[in-house]
Image (cartoon, rainbow, N blue to C red):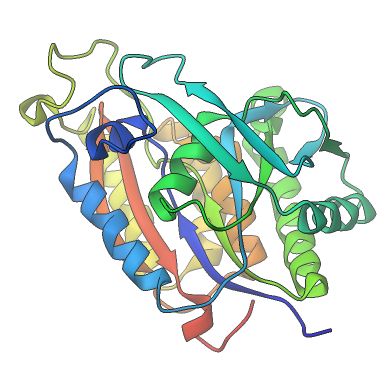
Amino acid sequence: MTKGSIVAGVLAPHPPHLVYAENPEQNEPRAECGWETLRWGYERLRKSLEQIEYDSMVVLSPHWQTYVGTHFLGVPSFKSLSVDPIFPNLFRFHYELTVDVPLAETMEAHAREAGLVTKMMRNPDFRVDYGTIVSCHLTRPEWDKPIVSISSHRATQYFSADVMQGHMLKLGRATREAIEASGKRVVLLASNSLSHRHFTSESEVPEDMSREHIYHHGQYLWDMKMIELMRQGRAREIVELIPDFTEQAVAETDSGALTWMLSALDFPEYPAEVHGYGTVIGTGNAIVEWPQARHGGAA
């Protein structure tokens, strides 16, 4: 069997506002415009990914939260309605997706062998979380690639960001080994924002961009620090800073998604490609690609 590989890793934030502003047929609410800098960033990402061949997307989302172990979707397909619990006025999305179950099972087995507590999610009525759906839709709106969805084991909340880091570093290594064993070419999606302190009220017109800005300057400084490290190819330093970043910027890196992805990529030393940065209800969001296939091939 040909050795599998990670062909790209992507920081793929999941604000439902971006899907709302795109007006896809699957989403019931309609928008006039909004958040163009981020939406154009996703357009640039899609054009970049069109240049490489890949079989599946693997996504780790903060909004599939598990408190006992790491779970993997293990049902071949799902079809349902996803409603954002905070923004039901913006996101009521009819989704239909397929799951790469053999790859998910291989990942679960490698993670279990690495000493992690794991579980395959076999419930056919499970409702896929909106973070997974938004990141996958904005990366590949055709929905013609199977996915693997991984839960966020909430070690940061139960223990500390340092405990989360250790868990996700191990999960990242197991993910890389499983993909290599599978023979498949895979894109990884870390589905999280950067700074994540957000507004507590919404404007009358949600897509009114005159009301959109970062929550406070300190968050912006942290976001720019992390993005500059990405642009400089300093992945290990990013991981070392994540506990402080998570605490100081209330960052969504508390989910472990970014740590997991950088570990799976084996801490790339080449510059990442920043396709876009912008704010959504005060949170900082960056669309960033590590084009692994163009920098020496596989992770």
